[in-house]
Image (cartoon, rainbow, N blue to C red; front, side):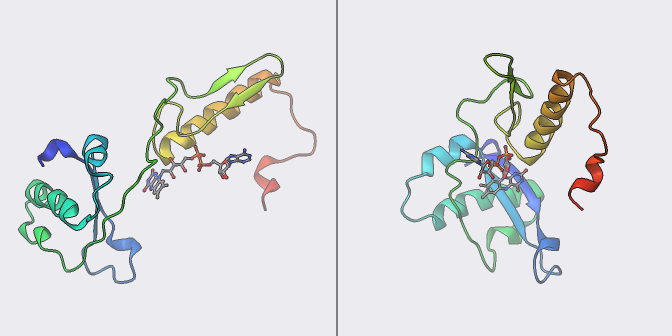
Amino acid sequence: MDDADLAWIGLDSSKRPNPQQPHFVVQSSADFAQRHLESQDLQPVGQLMLQPAAESLSLPWLNTPEWMQVHRWRYAFPSRPWHEAFLSTGTPLPLVCCGDWCGGNLAEGAMLSGLAAADEINNKLHHLPLDNVNFLNVFV
Ligand SMILES: Cc1cc2nc3c(=O)[nH]c(=O)nc-3n(C[C@H](O)[C@H](O)[C@H](O)COP(=O)(O)OP(=O)(O)OC[C@H]3O[C@@H](n4cnc5c(N)ncnc54)[C@H](O)[C@@H]3O)c2cc1C
């Protein structure tokens, strides 16, 4: 494995019960995951990811962690993503679709897609105000 097989490294300590102890989340590239998706034993696969992670962060001790858990993330990314922020049609009924499959893979992409879709719906409604509805109070 080389650095190209690592997609992302996050320092996750603050989300853990003991935030003093460093805790990393390491994600592989989709290609690497595909190659190892059916491996029976995931521990050596995790070890393959740790080595370049330790090297790229210049943290040799990361190569021998106290604890390691390896997960498959089988449906991590859409196989046929849409190239725009939302998908819209006017016929037979107005329909606006959004989600992480529209122009982005993760939560941020899903949120940006949702905002763009809301804007599009607003355009379709000609920016008509909803009487006596304050959107910010709807969920209170
Ligand atoms: C294990 C895991 C870890 C992740 N970690 C991260 C992370 O750390 N950072 C990050 O940015 N992203 C992460 N993601 C990705 C992130 O969760 C997604 O990109 C994001 O939730 C997509 O939002 P969405 O609104 O497009 O779809 P979803 O969140 O999947 O929402 C779709 C909704 O539609 C509902 N639904 C489906 N079909 C129907 C139907 N027929 N009728 C009515 N409702 C329906 C579902 O129940 C669901 O509530 C992770 C995903 C997983 C699975």
